[in-house]
Length: 230
Image (tube, rainbow, N blue to C red; front, top):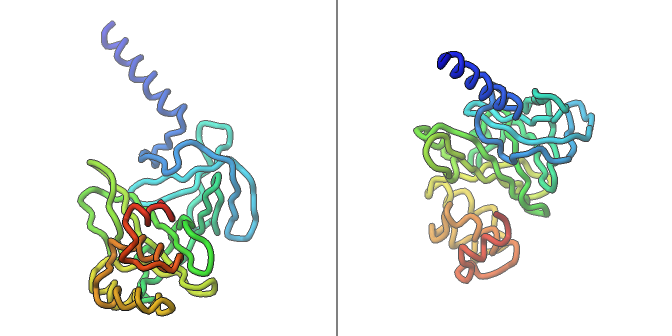
């Protein structure tokens, strides 16, 4: 009887997990949690409305479409141009270069990028789930955040002008000083501080804040910079 009770309990638990839409290949936490209304654009340009969310595991990200069933429709990045989920816009970029090394592709063949800042200078965020023992890759790895187990690796991506290519921001201090300064030549004081190594990868938000609002970066705190984007 005890064995039968245990078997029934395990089946019930499995049923609960399945009813919640936990696809066997996507066990990690969803980036945006519950589905939100939005739109997605397929690679052929077709645009459709739906309830969407982003779901990640250690090898890939997919956009899930709620079909009103247990199993969602999983769209791979190669199938998409981008999507809008609630108030957030995402685009799928192919072979994002690296500032100072545009022919390098540190984010892989396809990258799902969250558009953070629009305008003449665009700021985008690439979020990747990685194992806790994995190191940032190709010198473009950004901030690691999360507790034990799988963690999120955030890489900032820039489009310096509306017609420019997307470029991942280097994380190494020397690469940052050498290559990032040239993107801010319109603001000489900021450009000089970056080139001199006085402002580095950890100051990325402060740099963007100072550049966008034409402020002296020495007067821009980390708290103030955090108000321009999360």
